[in-house]
Every structure is written in structure tokens, then in C-alpha cells.
Length: 165
Length: 125
Image (cartoon, rainbow over the protein chains, first blue to last red):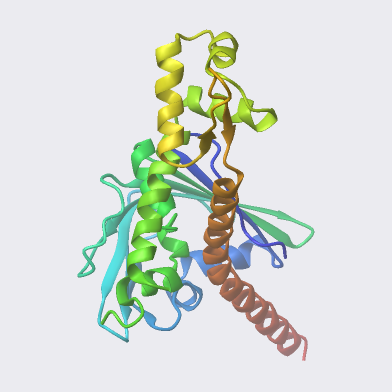
């Protein structure tokens, strides 16, 4: 599969596109079942102690990561706005800075994930809409364009640094 | 990676994106991508006053996106290609970040497909 394609179609948006070699219903499950979601959204040193999703319009979700190395915690939370099984998820997203002191934009984002299956390959398009250009640029410059695709490596570097602990 | 240089880089990128987020400045950058230009050429091109163009150029120069040389009376502006290479490198890094998780998702999906096949086989028996 080609690597993720990141584009900035307007001042306040980011789009990430990626193909997956699986039917949409499996990709959907990986996005919506906490035990599966946790498996691909966490990785050393980050564990995911909280992954709750009330999968219905108006339902809330909360994800929280924790570093086994230094106990750093952060997360995301929000509300599902629209759900179309195997096709589309729309949710708000706010950053929970936990104990990191890391700021990621003043206001939350609106995220639309669409799953488009063709010949058993599913194209996942993630549209992230920021409240302002400043918020988007801030998120982009830290490389953290979406909580689902958290940059463990970079965040680890930032939080731990080399010899900074 | 050194934490100070990481934070410095982030700060610098934020300023660079802010500089590019203005439609006129982006237009100037696109124009300069074709060829270098003097202030008066840009004034004609964009139908703006000289002070406006000059202030936009200052912003672009401050974040290192353009450089200005002096040739006699004129100071043509041109793109700083190294800076753009830095940005495209950084976009590559952002892509790597997403890729990291997506690769884990690839592996998970392969496993899910495999276990589905097993279930189907069992059902057939």
C-alpha cells in the first residue's frame, strides 16, 4: 500500500488519505471496536488505558494514552455526530493534555473519516477541520494532525528528549 | 534528537505556515517559483501598492522563504529553495507519523482477514 498522503486543501483543513488491503467492514471494526482500536493506536512506550466509545450519534468517546517510560498521559475526547456503518464516522475532537502540559490548539476539531471500498481495498480519508488557521498550523507544526494517528515517536521525543529526563 | 532543536523547529514551522497562509503571500511565492521578481514587477502583477508588497516580502524574508539580493537600485526577491526542501522533508515526517500507525492497522487487518478465513473453514466442516 502507498504511504499516507497528507494534504492541506484549505487554511483550516488537513486531509490524510490511505488505502488498506481489506474490506471496509474490517477497517470499520478496527476503528470502532475498542480492543481492536487500541491495538493499532498504541505502541511502545504508549499503552492505552482508556478507550471508551459510545458509538451512536450524540455518544461520547474518550481515549487516553500513558507512557510506560515516564508516566506521561494525554488523550482525546469528543462526541460522535454522524455514523454510517462501514462508510462514515463524523466526530468532534478535543485534546486532553493530561499531565504533559502540551497544548494542541485552543478549540477542538471536527473529524470526518470515510471508508470507500473497491475491489477489497478500502480507501480511508480523514478530513480534519480546525476552528482556525492558527490551530491547524499549530497542530501541523507539531506533527500531530489527529489523535487517532498520534505520533508516538515524535511525542516521545518531545516529552522525553534525549537525556532530558 | 535534541529537544531544544525540536521545539525551535516547531516554532519556526508555525511561523512559516502562518506566512504562507495569506493568499497574497502565497501568490507571491507561486509567482517567484517561476522566476525572481522586483517589487515593481510584483506591484504590477498583484495590483497592490508598493508598501503592501514590501511588507509581504518582509514577512516572507523573515521566515526565510525568500531572499533578496541587491542589483543596482533594485532588490529582486527569489525563493529560498533550501527552506522549501526543509518543509517538504517535514511533510515527509508527518506522513511517517501517520504511516507508523497505519502499518500497525495493516498488520491488524491482515490478522482479522486470516481469522475470518479460519472461521469460514470451520463452518464448512
